[in-house]
Length: 337
Image (tube, rainbow, N blue to C red; front, side, top):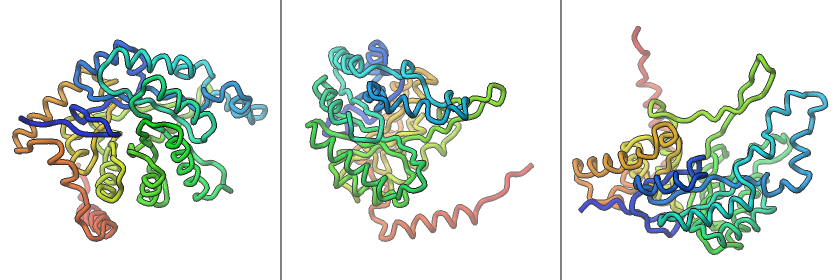
């Protein structure tokens, strides 16, 4: 009997396919359909820090700062009414989700500072969430802010949240650090139960006709396999070197993608774009394809394949990566035609 079960955030999951935070989780019927299709857990749509602090004047300051000279800048920021759910409605949504499905529900907080996060981390736990994902999305723009100050803010946030809740905590972060391996180790030491690699950097675009800065949340597709290669590389490098479990997110569209993620050391593979583009029924398709692949290649369990293609046994991972880089460059051939 093939065994797809895995463990993540202290949760025993029936398989490693987990829908990541997306608009799909805003609807209870959609949550039920994802469960029916075979999702083993669901990460809820994020509650944004700006929603928590909306009663303060800080958000209004950033929404209007500089617009006396650059009116176009107003279009860069969403109106408060455009955010997903108010804090109270978000908590009620988690309660309803827990009452509607049997699989674990992972709450999501999106921001960077401690502030109201401590309060709402507790409230999300009290609402019934089985775990919490801290989606730390912060683009430093102050040229006088040193990198160590940014990193310390991450560590302090994780420590503070971990002290305030009893549920497991995952940290979703970007890869843009001077030493990603160091960040992973320090977050591990700060108490993170899992690392979710990676948060995508959404760059805005410019509408030249209306002179507006507009958001561009481009979805990954099955035709862009490079989307998952960065998290694939880092999970392979970190596997066996930190205690925290790892989740691969970005670019997972097929069973082959999910299997690659598991082989480098991920406990779960998360997806959103594939489900948004082709429907939540894809979870069942991918699960079936995974079982078929495991049978054909004589794998009995997810545990058996987890980390089998990581660099845990490599004495010098940096030298190993350098060798791969040199090989890829020297063997590149110009396309014909």
